[in-house]
Image (cartoon, rainbow, N blue to C red; front, side, top):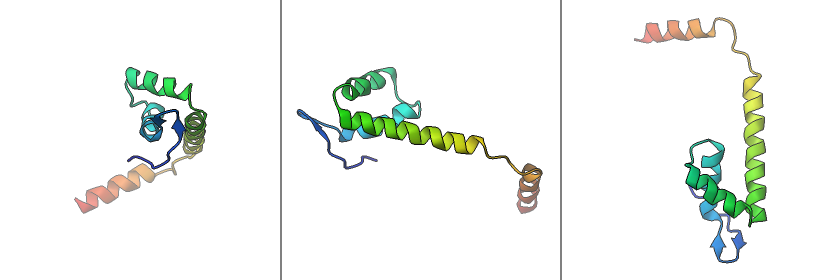
Length: 86
């Protein structure tokens, strides 16, 4: 999924970096991909802003999900429904 946001830094188009931002934030990028992105972020304010925004959104989502408690008995209810449908 490549987002069509076209920031420009000299000759470099930034669209290729947007998916890489997600890979880095999700921990799925290789070390060389991280270095490649960080080099670009050092030169491109728009991509750095995008990276920082996505990073903050990810932190907020994780915080919200971490604070949710699972209702007591939910796991047993799910197992029972699975057993009945099998």
